[in-house]
Amino acid sequence: MKNLTKEGTECELCGRWVPVTTVHHLTPREEGGSHLPTANLCIPCHKQIHHLYTNRELVIHGLTSIEALQADDRIVSYLKWIRKQASTSIPRSKKSKNVRSKGRG
Image (cartoon, rainbow, N blue to C red):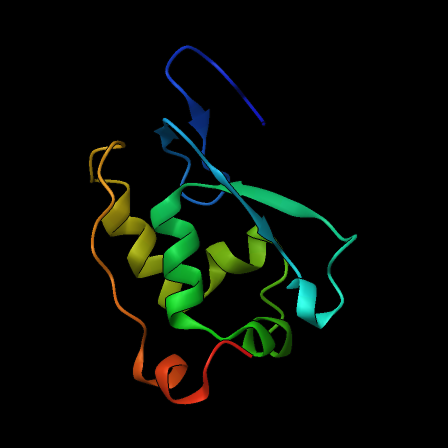
């Protein structure tokens, strides 16, 4: 894990220090990203990405780097909000209609 301290680990997307991070494949595994770069994300950020976009859409829209994700309009507004939340909270979220209608792929 990156930036491990007594307080936890830094989420590479939102920059918050959180107790635990999850590994996000910047290019989804099912889209050929098994051996490509990954990022350590807090649980809320990881969920939000997959609730906004299918794995295929992440590749189609070029959202395969932290910089691209941080520049995406839909994620920018989320990042402004999540940075104000307690690092120990895992807010409820639900999949967008787009993702619900298409499934994960």
